[in-house]
Image 1 (cartoon, one colour):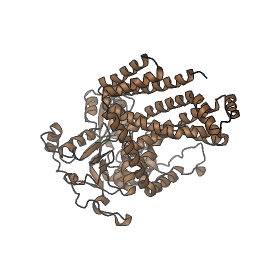
Image 2 (cartoon, one colour):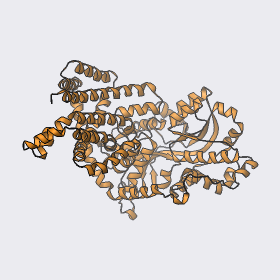
Image 3 (cartoon, one colour):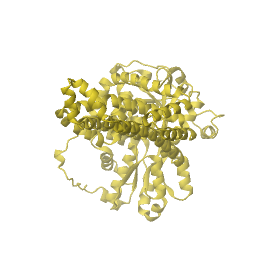
Image 4 (tube, helix red, strand yellow):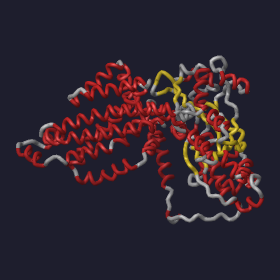
Length: 595
């Protein structure tokens, strides 16, 4: 069982190792996908047998802890020359005449120069600062970059924006590059990003081992320096290594380099239908001078033998590269309309920040009183206000009040937009059978589609941050509201509607005075369900840079910090209880009203 780390170079190495093990050694192999720290835990526990890329400098403590506990072993160096640094697109410095891009920062050469260019890399969520796209949330490089920002005196000029996943960071870079926009980001190689896009690494003070260790041990009194070249190793579960000496011997001989891997990743990008497996097959076919040194001659003979055709359940000639068509269309759409979406994004962001600032200006005790007042108005009792006040106090006691306010702002905006769009659509469906038959399959697809899928277009169109989080949340959370509005209006007794018509009420009055009031319990149930689904998107949205409680949960996952993740999860549950009980109380109040 290999660990399927979520970046392309690891996918390539895993595919090469699997081909060699399956054809040469007759093994059965599989891949378990995931992020670095969870998979490293799986390696320690024996759920994973092999990780083809262990970046020890980015998972220092968990790797050393597992190594010292004799749960994992190093099988040697995969490639010795991985690079890391802070990058900007070359067109930012030199322009790009072919794309009509003028130089934006011709004098930007080093990290020290960044203080003069905060407006160029402006953070839309904090317009007074620039935005620095840090390493993946929870990785050691994210901690190091945070120290560097402070060490270079850039923390006053730039926000420390931490993406939740490698895919999110890659999408942000890709989107900015395709639109010819400036971006300042940390990145590493070998990766397809550095192979596909012309990025320039900004200069830093030269690396030395002593200076690097001094900075990391005491960043307050030692200046930062450039990243060292990183030796990336192959890790294995200790028990597996004892039980599979032949496989271990092969993996100890497995060695590549930055250039070799970059060429493989470039092949993956130019041959979209190949993927990691296709790139591995190409490597096996063309680089026998490399991989034959890893295995005995008899094993090499089996590997280079005639490739067995894999049986497929569907004829290959009938298959169509739909994903390539979608990707090409999306790329053209982003290049053509990306600026328009960014302009709309600024309006949405201003609304989100206004709501967030409004909530932040309220003293915590006044906020709790307002929620208690709403609970009393909904329930006409004392129990619910007391319970919900205690629930909100719990969030404060956990030290998560400010993060909860950020999450609350996202939820309020997302649910508000869902109501503004979903209620009119539900009303329309209730009055038009043909529209209902057309829209229902669309709603089915929206509710069945994995929520992660909505993050992809949101990332490409709006970048990372709060706006794509709201966009993805609205799409994911709106369908139940539409369905319940439609259901509620269709469930109104027709005799009451006919009586109103006989008394001279037109369609508008029948809708406003009869149908909507009687359907209100269903509508409130729809708002309740939409709110609950929006809250469930909080953690997922943190993967694309939406701050708040979800970021704490993700950080707990990435760093395997159970307490941190659990406490943030409790705070999310507390918010869910507040929303759920108030909306249910309003719905029940209307349901209990005399008809």
